[in-house]
Image 1 (cartoon, rainbow, N blue to C red):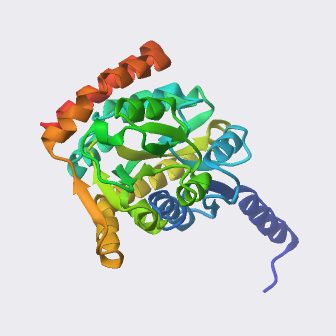
Image 2 (image 1 turned 45 degrees about the vertical axis):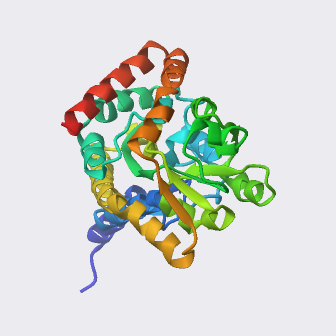
Length: 334
C-alpha cells in the first residue's frame, strides 16, 4: 500500500533530519594506522560508527602535513579530531613538556597504565589546560619506553660527548640531551631518515616498536635502554566542534574515547617486547643494551637542570602539574 501524502511528507522529513544529523568527521594523526596512535584512532572510529550514523575519515601521518600542521588545522576547526605526540605540543602548550622531564615516569607498564587511567594530573588538570587552547582532551596514553639508537655503544655521559642525537622539536628534549653529554639536534620526523643516512645525526630516540617499524635499526648498530622516559600520545577534539554537539553525541565521543584508550593501553604493554623481538629476528647482530641502575644514576644526577628549565618555561601552573604528577606516580608505584 502506498503511503498517503501526509505520511510521505513525514517520512521525507525523518530521512532529511537523519541525514542532517549523520556526519563525516575528520581525524588526522601523527602516525600510521598500525602504529599506537593509529590503533587508538581505528578503535575510536569503530566505536563511533558502530554506535551512530556518523563516519570517521582517518588521515595517517603525512597525509595533511607534519604534526605541527595538523594541530594547527585542528585548532582552526578544519579537523574535528587529531592524534598527536606530546613532543610537538610544548611550543603551544608549555605544560605538555612535563612529559620530557627525564626519569619522572616509571618503566613498569602496569604502573604506567594505572597512572594514565587514574592520575589527577592526566584526568583533571590537563583537560582544563587544553580547553584554553581550543581543544577538548579525549585521552592520553603511553606508546612505549624511549630507546636511544646509536652507531656506538655508550654507558656514560662521557661516551655521548660529541654524539649528535636527533630529538623532537622540544626545548626540554634539547636540554635533556645536553645534560646527558650529547649534542642534540631538533628536527621533524620527516627529516630523520635522511639525516641518519647522510650522517647529519648519529642517533635518535623512539620506542622499540617505532624503531623496528621504520627500519631505524638498519641505520644504527646499538639500541640502549636508559630508563629515562616514555613516548606519550594524546587524542583531542576541536573545542568549538565538541561544544556545539548535542549531549548524545558528546557522550558518544567520550564513550568511544574511553574504549579506545582502554584498548590501546592494553596493547601498549606489549609494544616494546614486540618491537624488540622483531629487531632480533631480522637483525641478529644488532646490540640491545640495558643500562644498569648504577649507570642510570649517573645520567639521572645530571638532569636536575632539566626539571628547573621546565618550571621556568611552564611557570607556576607547570610546577603544579609536575607536583601533581609526582603525587599520582607515587600512588601507583606503591
